[in-house]
Length: 205
Image 1 (cartoon, helix red, strand yellow):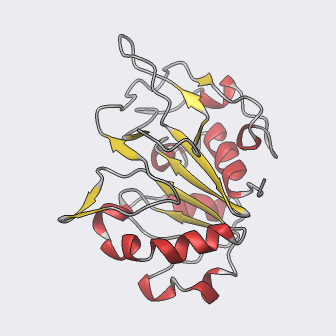
Image 2 (tube, one colour):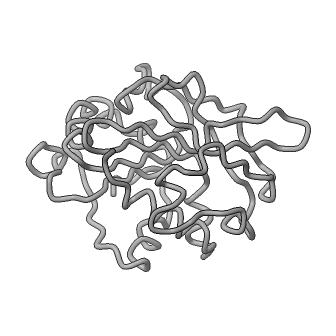
């Protein structure tokens, strides 16, 4: 886990039974990353830690060799005066595409995708009892390699599909999740736990 702006996701992951280790800049090396099944960045991590952009090539080699990387939401496309470098293919974060209604209907755009089926079958029931909001700062203008799994919108807004974007890369997977796991996991929302487990367990395709 690479800490971002502060959240309780690591504690929730430990409650799920995962062995969570915190990574600093010095830990992000090709050899060291090989030991991990998944790497997760905390919220806004790329906006506060420029080293993540500088280490993007190392992180993407980790993915290509079979790792899963899950990036929780970015607030903007920049870190200081520089453009954020994140993921194997380009996408832009749009702060205007938030879904603030916690009961907004969730459309399954790729219902057969492994992230929605293995090991847990994700259904509309998994989006019940969410708190405060659904999604923030969604991915837009995403490269065609990204698979956009979910569509949702607030009332009166157009459908947006950037809340969960997944790109297979080499033997692994890169995930951009603007779904508000940082609110749902500490609140004990079962569906959020089930979906996070699927993302951590993604296998190469």
